[in-house]
Image 1 (cartoon, rainbow, N blue to C red):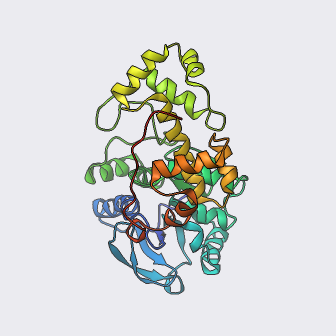
Image 2 (image 1 turned 120 degrees about the horizontal axis):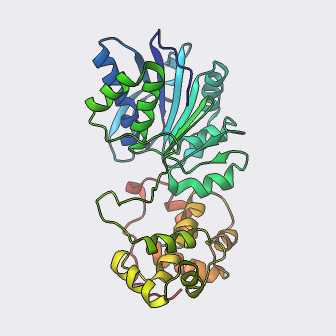
Length: 343
C-alpha cells in the first residue's frame, strides 16, 4: 500500500489530544519519528501536540502533557494530522475541532485517529465512504453510529487519505509503516531497532489474531472454534448442545476444555461475551436499553439488567453514565456478585 508523503521536505505532523487520551498509544506513534530524525541527523519530521484550548492536558493514566492551542498551531504545511482520544470522543467534536479537521482535509493532509479518534473524524463527516478501525471494545458502537463507514477489525487501516488505528502498541506499527512509505525500508528498520519494536504487523493484521496468547499460553483449537461460533451468534444465542454439534464435540468434552483453559462453563462464557458486547453499546451509543438487550441475545429486559449488574457491578442505566468517564472519577467500588453457570 502506497501513500503520498513528501520525502524531500520535513513532514509536518500534528497530534490532537483530547482530555483523558491514551498516552501510551500517542507516544508509541510519535517516538519512531523522533528516532528517524535522530538516526538521519536531520528533521525529517516535525510535530506539535495540540488541544483545543492548549496548556496541560491529562491522559487517562493521570499523567499530563503540555499542548499548543488550535489557535496558535502552525497548520499551513501540515502533512499528517491525527486525533488521539479515549473517553467520550463525541464530547470533543466542537466547532473548532470540526474546522481544524476540515481545513486539514481541504489541504489534502493525511487525516487519522488513534484509539477512539475515528469517532471524532466520523462525527465531523470525514469518514463517510471510507473504511476505518477502532479499538475492538468500541467496534460494535462504531458500526451502530456510523453505518456509512466501513469497519475493519484490523490493527490499523489506511484508506486513501484517511488512517485509523486501534491504539496501544499498534500505533508503533502504524508510525513505522508511514516512515517506510515516505523514506524507505532501511530507515524504518533502523527506527524499529532503535525503539526495540517487536516484529511488525502488516496492514490488515487483525487486532485479535488466532495464535498463541501474548504470554505464551495457547487455548485449544476446539475452544477457539466454540468461541468463534458464539461470537457469530450473539443476537440469537445457540443452545450449547447445538454449538457442540457444530464443532463436533460432546457437551461434557466442551465443559472440560472450558474449565481447563477459560475457567468458566461454556454457557457462562457465552453469556459474558454477549454482555461485553452490550456494555459497548450501553457506554458508547444512545441506543435504547430494550434494543441493546435484544441485540445482545436477551429476550427479557429484566433478565438483561440483572445479568448486566451481576457482571459489571451496576445496572446498565447507571453504567451509561459511569462507563463514559475516566476510571478515577467513577463511583467505586464496583462489586461483582458470585456467579453460577446458569444463563
